[in-house]
Length: 115
Length: 117
Image (cartoon, rainbow over all chains, first blue to last red; front, side, top):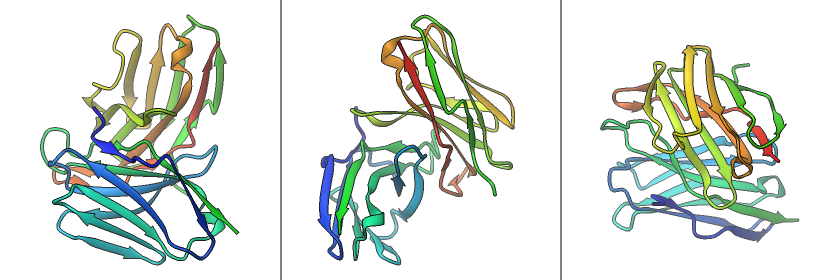
C-alpha cells in the first residue's frame, strides 16, 4: 500500500529552465510534507517542507505547492542548475495520533539537469 | 558538526550469516528511524523509535529482522539469517519529535550498503 507516490521515475530538464516534480498521497491524516534530495553514495538531505495549513512555501529557487483537495504536492526548482541533478524524495507525516512523526516516503524521482 | 553516523558503510556477507548495522543518532535527538532503499519501493520504513521505545516496526520482516536501541546513542538493525533479497542500502535517520509532531526534519546517515551473496 503505497501511501506516497511519485509517478515519474525520472525527469530531464535543460539548465535554466523550470523543474517540476510531483507527488501524490492517499492518507488524509498526513498534515506535513517534506522534500529530500539524495546524491549517489550519500544519505537524503532535507530540502523544503510545507504544513497542511499552507498551500505554498518558498525557499530561494525551491517552491513547494500543496493542493489538499487533490492530495497532491509539487516541487518547483527555478532556475534549474546542473548541481540539482539528484534523486528527489517526497515524504509525508501525520503530526497527531499514535504514529506521530512517522515519515512515509515516495519512490523518488531522478532529476537530470543538462548544461 | 552534528551528524548521524552509520557503520559499516559497506558489508558483503554470505547468505545465512548474521548482519548487524549500527547507528549513532545526533545527540539530543529522541526519534530514530531505519529505512531501506530499494529500486522498486524507494525508501521503505522498517522501524522507528522514540525515546528508545519502538513505535512502529510493521515494515520489518519479523522472522529475520530485529531493531533495538540499547541506549540513547546507539541503534542497531540485525538480520539473521540474511538472504540475497535483503541486499539494499539501509539508512538510519534521527530527529526531534514531540507529542505535537516532529520538531525538525529527520537527518539521515550515509547508509550501509549490504550485499548478500
